[in-house]
Image (cartoon, rainbow, N blue to C red; front, side, top):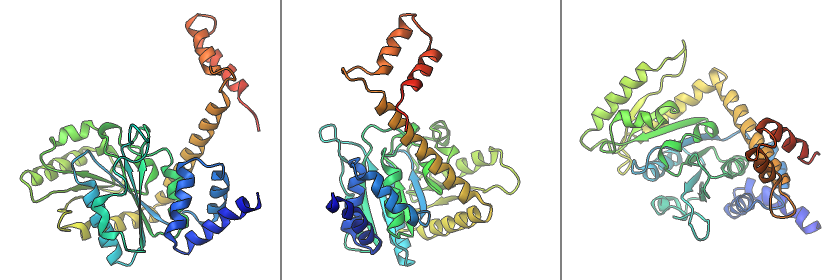
Amino acid sequence: MSRRAEQVPDLVARARDGESRAVARLISLVEDESPLLREVMAALAPYGSRARVVGITGSPGVGKSTSTNALVRELRAAGRRVGVLAVDPSSPFSGGALLGDRVRMGDHALDEGVYIRSMAARGHLGGLAWTTPQALRVLDAAGFDVVLIETVGVGQSEVEVAGLADTTVVLLAPGLGDGIQAAKAGILEIGDLYVVNKADRDGADQVRRDLRSMLKLAERTEGAWRPPVLATVAQSGRGVAEVVAALDDHHAWLSEHGELERRRVRRARDEIEAIALTALRAGWAGVHGATDLDVLAAAVVGGETDPYAAADRLLESAPRG
């Protein structure tokens, strides 16, 4: 037990000293839902809320990985330490990240100022992995200046990143459907920055015009942030410096208007709620394979009770303390 007690403080200390292996081990404890997870989170708590969190989302094919790679290069040129959480589809066999650590981000493999981790979505909707918020806490406590979260690329359900990031970047590209289709996907409602990647292709200017027109139609209060629409060719790095400058502008606006604190409080609230609900579901497991929820559901179907009364009974049966 003493060895276990010493393990977490030692890992946290090494992670804060910039040791990548310690960061990797802490994130593995998070992903594996280790019995040490509570101790890890308690040890990290005093060192959080320092990193700037940037979510990068968009439909498959817009160049999220290439854009993330280009952003890392630009941020490193400015002397910032960068962490990357790249959420991949899950392997149907192992449950792990299907692509593993991103080949397209191999440019930074030997850079000690960059840490890249692929995480498996494991069926979790919203474009993120279930453990992404806790992995973010590890990178934040480890002293990274910026954490980029690249979503899995699942289209219409890929909006959860907006609740986790300080700034959300929505990527689009010409040739992948018109702007109206993008609006239907819902991602035009969550962006703080819009970036048309592959801007050297035909149709890029039209996508930018469509985006600007739709954003003008959105109702915004006086003094609200006006999302810019930028153009990049991530493969060559063209326009990436402008994106980083816009990220800095948005962060300054968030800080000035108190929105940064509001977003982070909301993020913590959602995280607490998710942990509490998970604990409740675990407490409802029955001893004979069925769950209390299954039994109550059968009672509702059989007309023995109603859903509201069943919910009350379920909450009463939840373990306390």
